[in-house]
Image 1 (cartoon, rainbow, N blue to C red):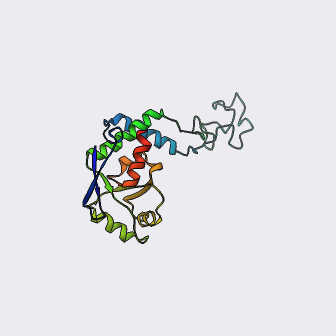
Image 2 (image 1 turned 90 degrees about the vertical axis):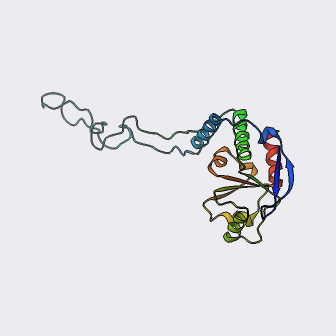
Image 3 (image 1 turned 45 degrees about the vertical axis):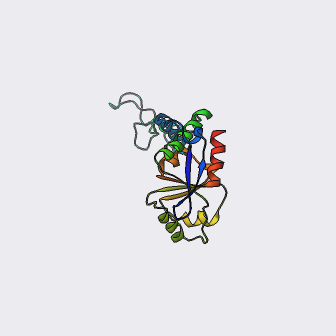
Length: 207
């Protein structure tokens, strides 16, 4: 597959050949569901916690004698049926993380990249750099490319001016190629890659 390489004004200046394994794979929606579900589960903190009847304070004495009062028998005021008592079957701290096979994760990533390429939402830029870390320069850069929707920018290495200029834009996210993931690829409309980053990404996912 060949992709156009654009300059900063959005004009095609050359073509680059990419591996079909990374950018021409079959799009499988069920893989997106599996991988995104895993990513969201892995982000959960799992700190929700309630106290059982053995952990709440008080309730050491039987509130009244077993028989003869006409009331239901009770052994503790900390029972879940009492106000101020423990919680029955409540949440406890736990780890929600789990892993899918590496081949599944890679197939989903290749499918997401292929979907961007097929839909024309993958834009390869010859060089992504901004002279100053100013938000208006990033806005101008995206407007020159004709991008008015959300965008994910991939870089091959840290570029402070680009990262700082995009930081205040809620519809733009900047990632290094090591951090590219299915969730972000699906969450943002455009995928903007520097040519160098595209080659590095291809080497990562198609090797």
